[in-house]
Image 1 (cartoon, chains in turn brown, blue):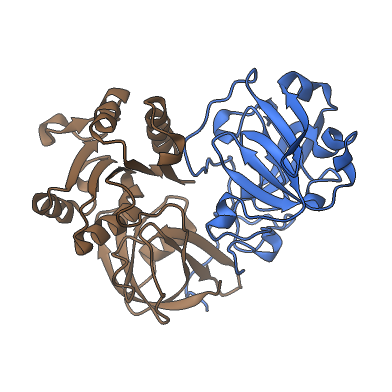
Image 2 (image 1 turned 90 degrees about the vertical axis):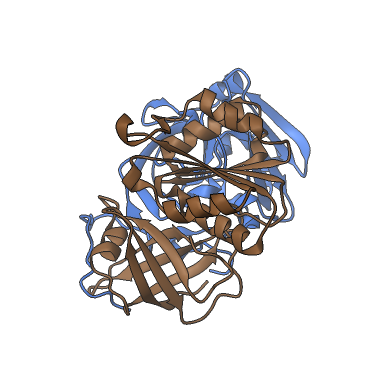
Length: 239
Length: 200
């Protein structure tokens, strides 16, 4: 698979740690499947190169603009450069779309449950936007765990969509918010919390879990303990 | 294409070689396509097969009767991280197949994990102390999240070729893709040739 050039069309600051980068590839991909990722490569003047993988968060129906939701990692040389140095109009090397496993395919299951930890929501945004645009009737339940209110990505878009589609439900869980600011669940998701969600979903249900390693380990192993078949749980971990 | 102002953030050990596109980490990350199956040593069993026919069945006690070796090696994950000088202990595949007809088998293997994950590789990449059934990592029993109680390690290839929770190794005449290979990853996976995806 070859590296190709893309042009940065837009950069949107979501909060102090997260930015959305909209990149237009010079060669349009034939097809993007929700959940796929791209590799982004940076090259220094001395030839040193670094590359990282980032999930596509935009709708796959518009392959002219590919959106990546990228958290600035403290130790991350690629994410830091993207956050601090990349400007609108810059060119960047990309390779993709990649990955045919952590994908949602229309009408594959009646129920889809997503567990997102932090920027683990990124591939799910592509799936949710795809469903919204296709007016797909599969029931989506998004369980979104993040630190504080200011860390809830795409909050308005998701709330608006939830209000408009009876087949989309969102449960937000904040791990570090003050009680006076949030009337929903605060703290880590317990086995009981996860059990309620697993119980309400029907047999024909696929589970996606994406986020930091500890989050994914906790959620996926709990779902497994609750009796869900191994092959119905798809995971994607950060590092 | 040069990205103006971009420079390495990490200190690069000039004495160590890193395959293209990789960066170093200090601890072994956990990357798996699904949850972590919990397999007790008492339940763990490794089946060695030839074209689906059972040749050898090895339980935990059997594994401990084989010669135990230490294996210090660099590992490289297709998701771009590498770790230098990881320390493993276990049994070289050479010892396991030594007294079987598989010793001279020249073909491929399809290795399967508890949980159903599979991966393929040529038998040449398994022998001559190039791979082992590892049960110890950095002097500690291999944690379940990292593939314990035992995983196959084939460290000269990308680490997805080193299946966790190893359950069976099927020696086969004709190569066939495993889990990630079937989802678009490379059939061989040499990190030095950057064989990440099927057409690399």
